[in-house]
Picture 1 (spheres, rainbow, N blue to C red):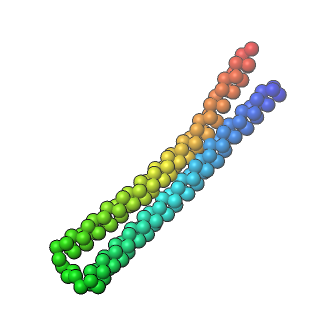
Picture 2: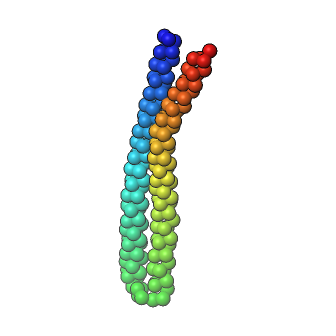
Picture 3: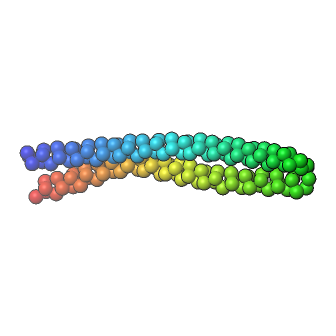
Length: 149
């Protein structure tokens, strides 16, 4: 009788421990997901700042080009002048797009990791309950076997 009570007590403690462990792991993973989402938002801000810097750089390059042509007394609306300005714009847009893509990929990867952590958190909670149920079932089976002897 005393050994059965000890076994039941041990089972309850083990099951409770499994549930609490699952809950703790769930909170931990969900906390990590929140941090990853915050990092993704930070990357989004960096992307916007980088795009603005690129645009400022383009404006500065076009202004310098215009000033240089004006200082030499060259017309600003010649075909070659327009072609050079268009090429400067094309390169700036291309560079901005490549940089933006890098930031977008980085933010996307962080968001995917956050989603995976959230799913893992939900699974950890469920696994705690399943482990508790398994422990109870296993020990109940052991007690039933011992009672038949």
